[in-house]
Every structure is written in C-alpha cells, then in structure tokens.
Amino acid sequence: MVFSNGVKRLVMEKNITAIIESHKKAIGKLGNKIPEISEAVRKIINSLKDSNKILICGNGGSAADSQHMAAELMVRFEKERKAIPCVALSTNASNMTAAANDYAFEKIFSRQIEALAHSNDVVVAISTSGDSPNVLEAVRISKEKDVPVIGLTGKDGGELARLADVPLVVRDINTARVQETHILIIHALCKLI
Image (cartoon, rainbow, N blue to C red; front, side, top):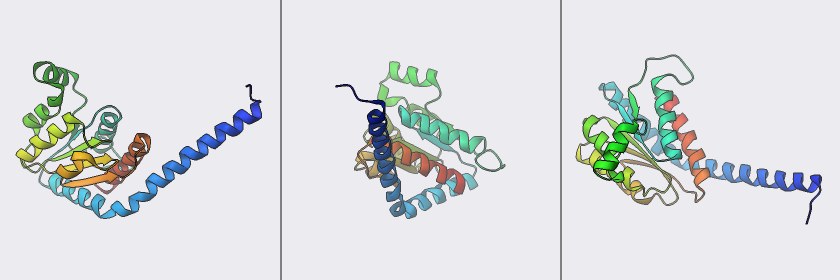
C-alpha cells in the first residue's frame, strides 16, 4: 500500500510526538531523585575539596556519557572556573585492550581503578541496565579501595543500584530514555559541582 505524502507526514509527526511524550515522562520522574542527586553532588564536592579526582566509566552510549561528563568538568560548563580533575576510563584504548586481552573484558575499568583510584576519590559508574559486568567489577574494586561510587542506571537499577553508595536509578525500560535522563543528571551534577 502506498501512502500519500500527507499521510506519511502525519505518521511521522505522530511518532515524533510519542518519542517526545515518552521523554517527558522519563524526565518527569527525576523530581523524586532530588535528594539522591544532592547527595551525589555533596560526595563529589567533598572529594574535590580534599584534592581528589573523579573516575567515570561506562560502555557504548554510557562511555560517551562518561566522556561528556569528564569534558564538562575538566574544561568548562556554563562558566569559567578552575579545571576539575576527572578521567573518563573509556578513553584509553591501549589500557582497555591490554586488560581485555591479558585478563578479560570485565577488567577494562577495574584495572584502571586499581591503578588510579585513591581512597575518597569518587567513581561515577554508568550502566543503563545496571548489570554490565565490567562496570560492576570496577565498582567492586572501588569498594575494596574505599572509593565512593555514584551509580547512574536504569530499569530496576540492577546490581549497580545495590552496590553504589548513591544510586541514581532512572526507572524506565527504554534505553534511549534512560540515556537522555542520564545526560540531564550529568548536567545537573556539573552545574552544581
């Protein structure tokens, strides 16, 4: 069946409207997370006051989000200020591929945490499912080193929500909506830090 351009346009606009409404619904749930976001900001600020750093990890889109967060903090976000020490652990291909090759893919972030993290640094672990094995391994090593963990996750929170000191769970089953909401949380963290 061939549709006219007018019908195609209406179908397209209906789909766009559904995406926007789905986004607004996911973002709308953040009002319940204000205390957790505030706690994450407090943990990070306290760490930075003691000359510590932020280490951020995630896979795929969450790796991009970790790099986005690191860039906003290290370079600038909305105003001029001193650079904030942070590292997106997904950026060093040599470290990641060596760990994956010599150990296992689950070790690509944890080996970096083992080498770089000190007590009272902060790890921001991002996983839309909350069950990414390499992110969870990074969290376990962080806990062993007494490094607080802020977990950005989605759906039911997965294991990450149970392990994180401050779990920020976007309770939505759509990965795109979770990622969009994570970016809003990241921007809120960056502004408040």
